[in-house]
Length: 390
Ligand code: NIG
Ligand code: FE
Image (cartoon, rainbow, N blue to C red; front, side, top):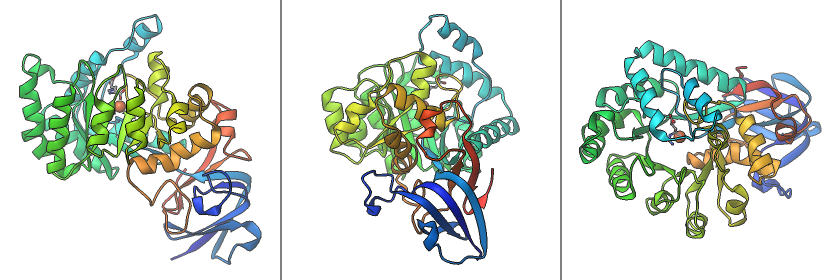
C-alpha cells in the first residue's frame, strides 16, 4: 500500500472535535495530511509530517473533507424549464410538477437514465462532492422504481426508496391502493437495492398516517427511514421522523417550537436544502433557530429537475450563510460532517485517521471563501478513496 503526504496546506478542516480548537471544524493551520491507500493515516502540522512514498504540495491552499450530499433525486429524465420560467414569472411551486418528470422517466431507457445520473455525479464530483445519496421517486410503478434503484445502486451505497414521492397518476382515485402497493409488491422489489426508505409527508402527497405505515413497512424490511418533512407547510413529518428514529428530517422549512424541540432531543438530523427555497422563491428554513436549540443540521443540494436543479454544495453553503443565519464554519461543517451524520456514517465527512481519504482542495486560503466568494469555482482538486479524481 503506498502512502502520500499532502503538504503546504494553509488551513485544514478535519472535523475532528478532539483537536480542541474552539470550532467544531478541528482546524489546523500550515497543515499536512498523510494518506495510506484509501484512508487518512495522519493529520497535523506540516513540519511534523512523517516520511511517505509520495509528496504533493498543496501550494498554500485550503483542504476540506469532500462534501457529503445526503439528499438528491438524480435518476430522472426530461426537463422542467417551462415550470421554472413560470415560477420566475410569479407562479408558485407545487409538487404537481413531479408528474411531468414521472412521465419522462417512464419513457426513458435504462441507458438514458444511467447516462443522466453519471453526468450529474461527475458535475457534483468536480464541485467537491465525494459521497452522495440518491433516491427513486420518478417511476411510481413496481418496475420503474426498482430499475431506478438498481441503476443508482451501481453508483452509490446510499440509495433511498421513494416510491412514496406522490401518489402515482395510475392510482389518482385510489390513494389507499397506492399505499398498499408501496408497502407491498413495490417494497419487495425495491428493498434489495436500497438502504433507506423515504416518504414525502406533505399536503398533496402523503399524510402522517400514510407516511407512518410506509416507513414502518420499510423498517420491517430492513430499510432505515428518512423523511421529506415540513417543506411546503406545517405538518406531522418532523414529529414522525423523530418518533421512528429517522436518520434525517429533510427540508424543515415550516417548524413549530415543538418540532424544533423534538429534533433537539433526538438523533434525527435536520437536513436543510436551500437550493429548493432558492429555485421556488420560498421562505428560507431558519438554520439559526435550529442550531441555537441544539439540533444537528446538515446541508445538501436536493438536486432534482423540479424544485432544485443544482448539484453544487458550495452554492448551498453560500445561500445558507447569506440567508439562513449560518456562519461559514457551521455551513461547512453541515455540508461535510453533518451530511455524514444524516447518513449515519463516521467514515466520511471528516479527515481523521481511519476515515476515507475523500477531500477537496480549494483555490483559497480557507474554507470561509466558499461563502465569501459565492459562485466562484474554488474547488481545484478532488481526492476520493486516496486517489485524485478531479
Ligand atoms: O425534495 N419535495 C419533494 N420532492 C422534491 C421535488 C421534486 C420535484 O419537484 O420534482 C424535493 O424538493
Ligand atoms: Fe427531495
